[in-house]
Image (cartoon, rainbow, N blue to C red; front, side):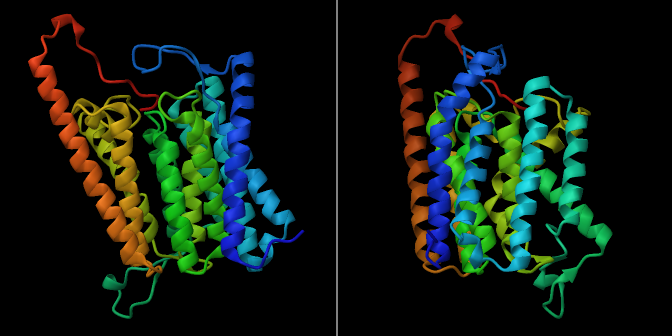
Length: 380
């Protein structure tokens, strides 16, 4: 059996296979996690009160790999140019390596610096295999309107910063149930649309598989979560998103415009940058655990766990719709209008509900000892 010669059909199959396998594998991983003791134990900084399996990333990675294998066996890769076919396998290899680094941390609690060193080594190896930022399109800085080509040294530096930076941004976003998986799924769907608009089918297939395993995992990871993805899962999501954005929104094998992926992923990147700058200002390590993240701020503002996650979701989908406009995708202004309407409606309704809850609390006598602390975080 061969798939029809349509990139949209192949991407749809990739999404559905990844989602189906991930949904089916999570209960298996959960049972094995409890059997072997791979659980996240509750403590004062965490929001769960019972042990929860923390190696759910195994199910996501398995769904992703099985999805790509399925469309390869069905002939879907026949739509991909030979040089792009190699980039798919390079991306897959890098994703597995980053997953293993995170899984080692889940199992053995590695310190931050060995993890960072491992990420840099893997990112450098993937750069040598062609997944690289070779040029940056900044037409407002170039009188000729052409891309600014980077030397090998600058290309390596830019690629490593990009891959490692986004990986850790997604990792740090994994502080509330369903947050990292949902944001990664929305971002991946945005990359599917952008990639196909730019006729980059290889990236479209990868992004569709990633969206499928992310949203499939969300079935079990939404609040209250029955399983955590762990560092293995968040590293896998972050690296794959970062590498797809290099393989995809490109004009050539070594030329990439960073504007589109920067738009889609700007929320976790901005959050990570703000947190790091705040810690450095206080003379602390960038990895010092605290409650500076955006989701912590929303929780302290009085929003519930689910409402906080929802607000970040809708803002991410709005950013993805802006990327579609920049990429000149079909019906881009319709998608932007819908995304804007969803964002405005969610913000207005959430604000009104929060005000109503605060007013109710003010009218209800409270026990002075009954205060609560905002939920903790699983990451720095």
